[in-house]
Length: 115
Image (cartoon, rainbow, N blue to C red; front, side, top):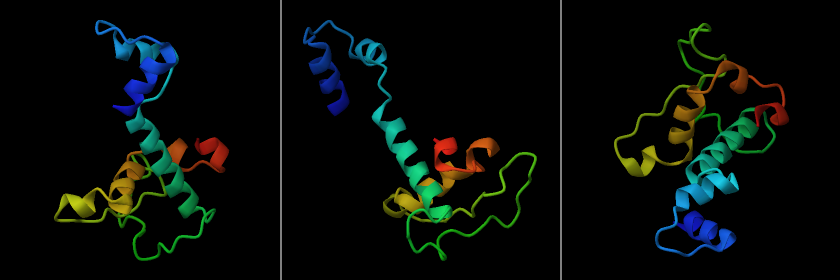
C-alpha cells in the first residue's frame, strides 16, 4: 500500500483509471515483499559468515542429509513450529527461504557476490 502511494506521488499521477502496477514497472521498483526477502537472506548470509554477531548456535543447525546434486552445502535444518507467530519469525522463515536458494548463490564467497 505504501509503495503504491509512493509510485503515484513520484509519477505525479493520481487519476483513478491509472494503473499503479504499470507505474511500478515503469519506475523499475522491486516489490516490498521481494525487498524484505532479500534483506532477510542478506542478514542470514552475514550471520552464517560471521559478518554480524548474532548468537545462532542453537537455531542454525546444518541439515542432517543434504544432496549436493539438488541442494547447496550450506543447507540448514528447518525449525518446526506449531503456530504462525513463531513460523513467520526471522529464523524459521529465513531458513526455509535460505534452503531454497540456488547453490551458486548460497555458496557465494563474498557479500558482494551474494547480492
